[in-house]
Length: 133
Image (cartoon, rainbow, N blue to C red; front, side):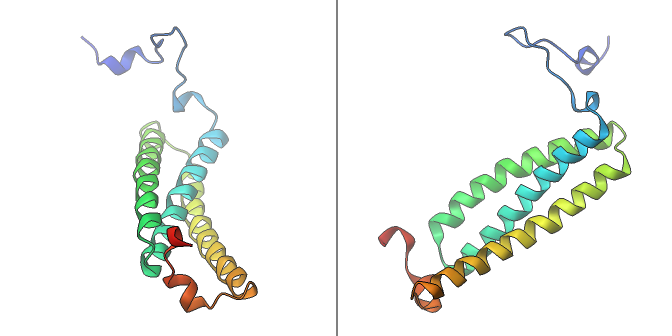
């Protein structure tokens, strides 16, 4: 008796065939891995910035996004590695992390620059609770 995984790809309850990650070409898998890792690391950067700034609700909401994106990223990468991931997939995984944290840092710098431009003192702007504005 074989594993239930031997029956994949399978038809769902509505009759649609589910495509497996291994069915996709390497560039498509690499793009999916890049986007998943980019979102995951960008959210980690945003969470770190919001925790330091004391924005509790934003940090909590970001944590929910981190949980979901972390599961998706690990699932996609694990499937890619089990199916014999191409080196390009791993490079895209690493590049997604680098660009994700850089984009989070860039957005925070932009937010602070806008606060300065509109007359908010940075120290005051970071201490103001966002839901009381």
